Every structure is written in C-alpha cells, then in structure tokens.
Image (cartoon, rainbow, N blue to C red; front, side, top):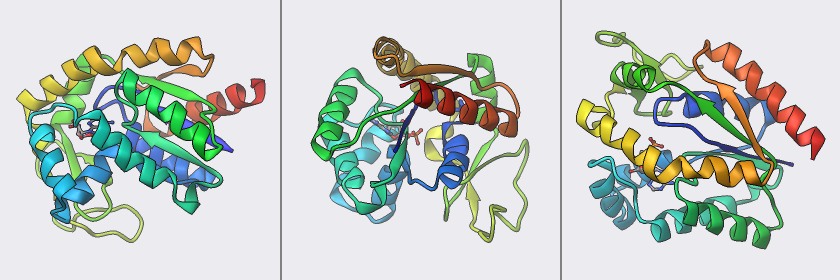
Length: 220
Ligand code: AMP
C-alpha cells in the first residue's frame, strides 16, 4: 500500500508530479484543489462556499475540507493506496487525516516535500495555464496553442486559474508559509518526510520522487 502525501508550496509541481506518480503506481491522485474546482463547476453549495476563500487565496475552513477528503478516501479505488496533493494544509487537517486513516485501516507511508525557491515559484505560477477538462498544467510565456490541452487524448481549453493573479499568488505563498510549512516538522518527527529538490526538470524530479518513495517505504 502506498500512502503518499505531497508537500510543497503553490507552484512547486505537486500536481504535475502527482499525475505521473498516480500512473506509475496505479493509485488515485486526490487533489483537494481539483475537488473544490469540480464543486465550483457543478455549482454545489460546497463549491459556492469554497470559491469565496479560493478567490482570495485563503484556505477553505478545515471542517469543510476534511469532510470532502474523507468522502473521497472512503471510495473503493483507494484500496491500494492514494496520493494526496494539496491536503493536508494545516496541522488540524493533518491530525484529522491521521484519525481518518486509522478509521479506514490505512496509513501514510511517505511524505515527499518538493522544495522550490520563492522567485521560481512566482515565475512558474505566472506562466501557468490549466486544462478545463483534465486539470493538466502547462507553462506558456504568451498565449497557449489554440488546439488546447496536449495531455494524452485530451484537447480541452487552456485557461488561467482565477487564483493565478500576482496578488493572489503572493497571498497563497504567504498562507503556505504560515499555515502549511509547519507540516514539514510534523511529518519529519514521524520519520515520514523526504526532501526533494523540485527545481530540476519534470522527468528528473519524477525519478527523484520514485527513488525516495522506494527508500522510505523499504526502511519502514
Ligand atoms: P490548489 O489547487 O491546491 O492550489 O488549491 C487552490 C485553492 O483551493 C487554495 O488556495 C485554497 O483556497 C483551496 N484549498 C485547496 N486545498 C485546500 C486545503 N487542504 N485546505 C484548505 N483550502 C484548500
């Protein structure tokens, strides 16, 4: 069983790496941000509530977020494991996750922390385009190609996320430092943390991640 929690600031590459890891290990990629965006697209009550926080670059309240992730982790496709991307983001969320996993008879096996310096995060976020259909992200310095997404058979339209404006990006990075960075020590103390230099190419970071996941899981 792989219980992978990806830590890292916005723009560190968690989503991109999670998609590749999910394919490699054949386990679901669970992104709390994607789950919220799905709720917004479907205009659910949860989506309307979450949008107010997301537009400001702030965190959606823990109770709402934990409930949503609980439902997702309870689904049968998580039997063989899971990759969490963007959750937990606060210490109370991490504690809730520990309790929830214990209830479900699952556990976290490794927590890769993808490190990227702030000026590179800002640079990446400002060139980020997201696919409306599959959520894949691409970096284009000007406008993206008209044919849209190029991931596998997808041709979805590429758009700029509303929370990818410079002001909201700054806010999200601050929120990460204040509320999410304490999770680094939380998982280090549990012996689950492994640091990954996220400033290399996508393929290189993917290899670092797979090696680190194998090493930590073997040592457990
Ligand atoms: P992301 O797609 O991970 O960058 O998340 C986009 C936005 O969704 C964040 O800026 C938050 O407003 C919200 N969000 C995603 N995950 C969480 C979480 N675990 N806790 C609270 N808010 C979250």
